[in-house]
Image 1 (cartoon, helix red, strand yellow):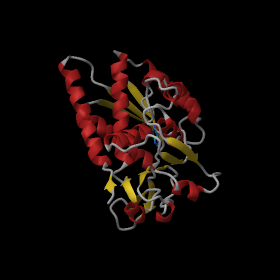
Image 2 (tube, protein in one colour):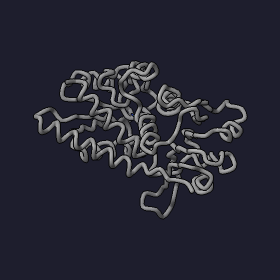
Image 3 (cartoon, protein in one colour):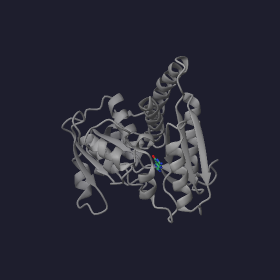
Image 4 (tube, protein in one colour):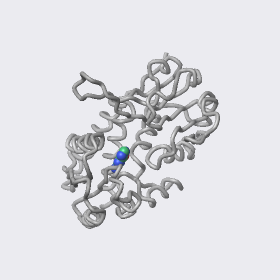
Length: 290
Ligand code: GUN
């Protein structure tokens, strides 16, 4: 028998905890956390992500501000807005939704964010702090994955773990967190140039799939009793459905699940935890300011 890791339920529990903290701040006459989000362009996934982030803020009682720009907005305009937010004492934390249009340098944008307001934890200062185990903002998806592992009491110490994908947002940071003291996993980061990938997956106790390749991980690749964390969220056209698409993870869930001890579904696994992690970082940013 396998356990489906319920990210929706876990995220709802954490939102309740955060709402309780907001109430406490209110009762003490303190300022309520305020998150701003910048969205450039009209990428459908990004629009949904940002709308959900704003909705989450409302649910826990945070203030939120959504700032939208056309997709042809010059980089300088965006950098100027970021400088304003850095200097705005009412804003505790903010994010710039990625990906950005090709004419805007993502690195330049990330580096222009004040590290103390970097609710995404993407700034080199925060990534560096994470690497050497100092407190700070941890990128939302890795933070959410670690929290699921913790709350489901999944053993990581001494376990072989493979992370599929080496993105700055998910693969690389989660591989670092899992290898740190306290998590103590033995981690392999696999990517497009990795040789013998099926063999590496087959000997892994924990598989974190963050490729964006629908159904990539098949039942035959997986070790009996493995823990599977699926980060994939690819939109697949689904005519006749209300949205016109369905979300597909990187794991062939139906066939892989019976071989596992724990597995996250898509949707309803890692996604809700990513959202709630941003709230946790925003609360941390607000608390650090005081
Ligand atoms: N694009 C995909 N995931 C993320 C995220 O966690 N934060 C931001 N800002 N953009 C993203």
